[in-house]
Amino acid sequence: MPFPTLNTYLAQLSRTDRPASKVWLDSAGRVQGKYFNCTITSAFQPIRALGSGRIVAYEGLARSASAGDAGLSLWKLLDHAASDDESIELDRLCRMLHAINFFRQDTAGPSDLYLNVHDRLLSAVSSNHGHAFKRILDALDLPLGRIVLQLPATTPQQGWLLNYVADNYRRNGFRLALNAVSVAQALAMVAEQRPHAIKLDARYLAGGVSLEPLLDAAQAAGVRLIFKRVETAPAIAAAADMDAWSLYAQGYFLDQPQAALVADAALAA
Image (cartoon, rainbow, N blue to C red; front, side, top):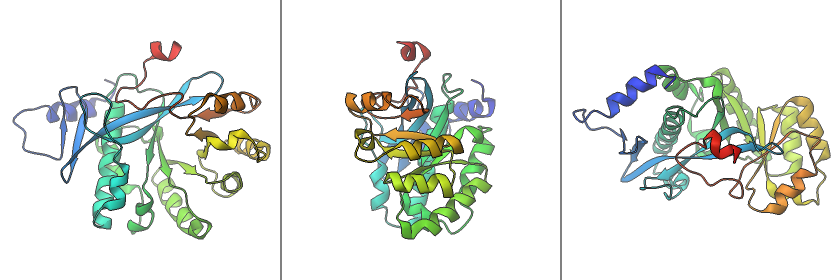
């Protein structure tokens, strides 16, 4: 394992004589956490470069613990948290679990890890977004430079809040991915926020709205454009007609989320 401090931490988690904790190792070596009466662990879905199929990143997803990879999505738990403090606690727990479960795997490098920030946290955290998570990464000697924080979609009225939060995360050294609800919003984000990446629903690949201005602007600004929820072959076929641009895709048609990162042999196949 290339992260000795993390390795030491995992060894401590595996001790049978350690005091009870909200974080522990299961029999498969996965790190799990407790939120109220729910056991949480991580699943990872690849983000691939269209054309080559190369994996450039993984998105960490919160799942209920299960014997295999059939755990249920738990992200909606945040919508029902009793308070802002509890939603912040769960969000940070999920990000910590995903970071540990990602970097403990030998196949982690050199891909990036995308981690969600729930929309409740945009307003729930009073200041200095990202500082607490940065301290966790620093304590475990994990590379902050390979983390991309994925912010939720916002309305035009929340533009000031998005800019405030994004500025805080950048000040703490994080790269950002933004979710756009339309091609027009994505184009505005390229011009105004210039994030590392923008995610756009794959339904826009079907036509009806010209993507060329967005593709040109994103490429000129060095912004990675990722089409999410790719669930059908036609979406991939439509993207193949845009091979003049560097595009990326993520979805169930390409990969199912799973606890283990995809090995090189599986990717080659």
